[in-house]
Each structure stands twice: as structure tokens, then as C-alpha cells.
Length: 537
Image 1 (cartoon, rainbow, N blue to C red):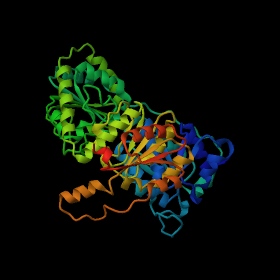
Image 2: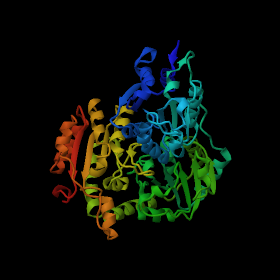
Image 3: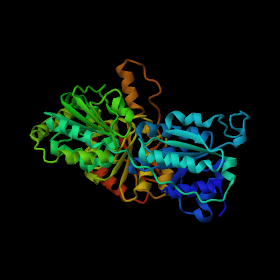
Image 4: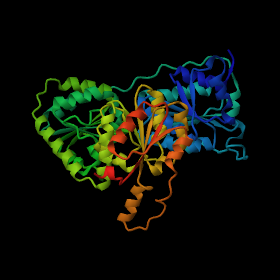
């Protein structure tokens, strides 16, 4: 059966298990569009039309965050690529498996600077620093090899985004063979002797502590068992929230973002760090200080000896290693859980006592919100002050249920991330939370959620602009510039975008409205103004 290279590319994506792609068609992707709509491929892969390529990239990111599986965006060459690059960079920083497939101008023009449509003379160099690899297919036969490379990477290495460009003339070339996916390599497994060493160090420790990141999401049950067997305190990065329920009596939640959490980490004699970079962006309270011995478990061998070198370094998939470690410490009789539960309770109380006026309002709203949500609700956050508070003030109870752009910290991701997550997990409730400033970055994607009848509550925390930067300017006695400006009439905006709208005037209106929004036939824009009387009670 003969098809174009563009059609064959879409078929191969389907054979690798891809069911949805996000993007905006253009004249440079028409043969891939043919693959999405025509012939034997029709319906195998659903195309979700975004309103901006940044939104398409963020939707693919949301798919990856919610599932741990590959999120795919398809965009035109040139501006399509540069528009999507922020999402690529965020996925790189957050270790998320995203595949960007783009067009490129005709292959005989590449690198020549002739001024052809959508020209970037060396497009792959735009995305090389923020991908595991970026490559251009110069002939149809390159596509199966590049796809195999990308999906092998996603399956067996620390996930980073990949970018494959296909020039428009290559897309149109005929393909007579049926491309098939390769058998994917396994994830790296730990060595038994390293697990035995780690088990001995942990069971001999007087004050062990466990730190988990997003790389440990598939090891949640075993990590909880390890925490309880050792009686150890567990804390997480923002990406690790919910791997052990944040309201578990031994969990400090994402307490690594607080100074009180840092104090507890510094007192541990052994720290087990699983699937976490221990990066600057995991903390809002300055650099971490870890004087105790460190056991690191990571799929990335470079993490074993970076700024926090491991005393025991285990290069392994976290799920494999934690299963083995759980078995290795079975039978240990812990003596410290009671005192650690007391430490956790008092530390959380101390953190709450130090909340400033804005954070108290955040905490009030988040408490009301938590009471309305199931344990598996996905909360998709922008970089905004209420989300900063939420990292430690609202409990997550399942892995991959708290989205926060900690590493790259882009704005505008919350809504399109939520759309991608809802596409991936239609049976899960999904909400989005953004400040009034960040929401405007990708506001048009409301139309995508409305078009697909998604009951996504879009909570806007309106604090009059970019308040975190405004606060920082005030603290440093810098005259405010560029951090305040007018907002749209959010009620009229919601109506224009075919969405419901509420502006609650008390707690009952908020909780009633949120529950209704989760059962609605379309998105609901929920407008919350900081310093409203009902939040300050």
C-alpha cells in the first residue's frame, strides 16, 4: 500500500501507541494532516486543535504529566517551532516525555538562507539545547530510525523531549512499505548488592529521611511501605507530591520548599533521595543542606555524582529499585515513627503559624477546594502565589495529581496542561489554577476546552497583576514597572468563550460553584479576588 511519508509518519505514531496529538495545521503540514484524516489511518490518531502552538505544546506536556507517557505536538516549521519551544524547554526541565514533530522548508533549501517561507536556516539548532535530540529527516527512510530513537529514549532513559523535523518535500514522498515500531529496551535495573548496602545503611540509621521526586511516581506503593517500615519522615519535590499522601502522618508534603523542612532534612543522618534532582528549583527557601549520608536512586547516571554526590549511588528505574529495597528491609522493627509523627505535626503547625496575610487567604481557599475534590483529582497550576502556598498547604493524595512548573517556571501552562490531562484521563476530575497575569498567556485555549465540552474549573486568583514580582520590587525599594495593568471583564470573557462563570461572594458559593463546575458541560471560569472579605475572615 503506497502512502505519502506524512501519512506513514502518522501511522507509525499510532503503532507506537499514540492516540492524540495537539497542534495547529499549516501549509507545511498538509501531508501529515492527510495522515490524520484520510485512508486507512483515519481516526487512528485524534488531532486536537489548539489556538496557539504554545498551547499545543503545553497540552502535550499535560498529557505527559498526567500519564508518564509520551505527549505529542505537531506544528509547522519556523514560528510553529519557536512558539512551541517554551513547552519543550519546560518538559526538558521537568523530565517529561514530549515529542515535537514539525515541518521544515524544502530539503534543498535548508541552510542556504534563500528567504523561503518559515525559514530557520538550521531549525534543529533552535531546539537542540532543550531536547534529548533534535534531528531532520532528509528522506522517508529516516523516519522509522528517528522514531525508534525517540521512543527508545522515552522507554529506557531519563525522559526528555525529542524533536523530529520533516521537510515538506520529504513529507510528500511516496512510501511503499509499512513501517513498524521496534521492540523497546527495558528500563535500567538496580544491582542487588547496592540494594543490600542501601538497606543496611537505612536500617542502621538513627534518623533516616526519604526525599522523593517526580521520577518516583511509579513506585508510590513501595515507597509508602518503605516509609512505614523505617518509620522515616518523607518529603517531596513539587513533582513528587502525592507519591506518599501529603496528609500521611509521616509526610512533610513538599516541605522541602520551606525553611522548617530544610531544618528537618539537615538533621537526618541518612537521606534516601529517589527520582529527584535535589535541584535549586525544588526549594523556595535557599540551597539545601544535607550533611547526612546520601543514597541516590536515579535513572540518570549523571545525578549520582552532581552537586549532592551519593555515598551509595543506584542507577535504576525507581519502581524496580524501590520494590527490591522494600523486600530488603522487610522485618525491620522501627522505633522512631511515633516521635517523627510528632515532629511532622508540630512542623506543619509552625509552617501554618508563619503564613503571611496573602498565604492565609490562599490556605483558606485551598482548604475549601480540597473538601470538594476526590483523591485523584488533578490540580494543574501556573506559577502563581496561590500555587506556591499550595505546594505545602493542600494535600495531594495520588501521584501525578499536582502539576507545577518548578524547573522552567513558565507562565500560562495551567489551562493547556489541564486540557492535555483531561484528554489523557477523561474519567479524572481536572482543575486549573492560575493568577490573573499568567492566565492571559494562554487564555484562548478556553475555546479548546469548551469545544470538547470539558468540565474544567479554571480558577483565576486575581491579585492585580504579577504580584510576586511586585512584592519583590517593593521589598527591594524598586519603583513598580510592568507588574500592574487592567484585566478583561472576566464574566464577559467567559461568555465570549462559551464558558460558565462564577464570582463567589462567600465560602458556600465557592464550594457549590466548584462542585457544579466539575459536573458541567463546559469549562467554568471562577474569578477569585485576593482580599475579598470572605477570604480574610
